Image (cartoon, rainbow, N blue to C red):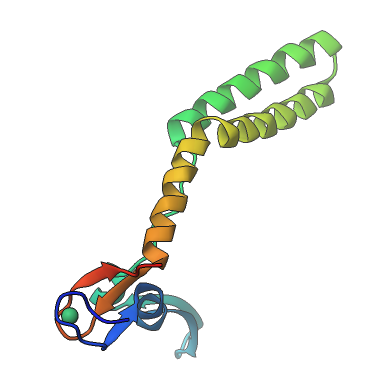
Amino acid sequence: MNCPKCDSDNTRKFSIIYEEGTSRGKSEGFSDHSNYETEHFSQTPLAKRCSPPKEPEISSFLMLIGLAFSIFIAFKLGVFAGSFWWGVGAFVLSLVAFNILWHFTLGTKKNKQYDLDYETWDNSWICMKCGNDFLSSK
Ligand SMILES: [Zn+2]
């Protein structure tokens, strides 16, 4: 893969730079009084630039609506059936249903955008000579 700008063949894929420049780990140690465990995350500025897109998450506002809705259903059904456990079951079921609904309706648009972004990222290259980033032509 040659850089379209300077024609250098010193080019690398975004995903390689990202993996190489990102480190996650745990370190354990002992001090006089206690042993400790710290998690560390480090990333080079270049790896940050080459990070993959973030996965879409359910928005907290929608989650709140879903939760309120589930509580409402649970309460209604619980009272109707005269059983606490019916209420709990209804609560869990409607929460699950809400999540599924989100994924197939509002989430789809976000997920599509994510898939597109991810594909772009997966085809992105950077030139180690001039710093230009470009898409690989398939
Ligand atoms: Zn270049």
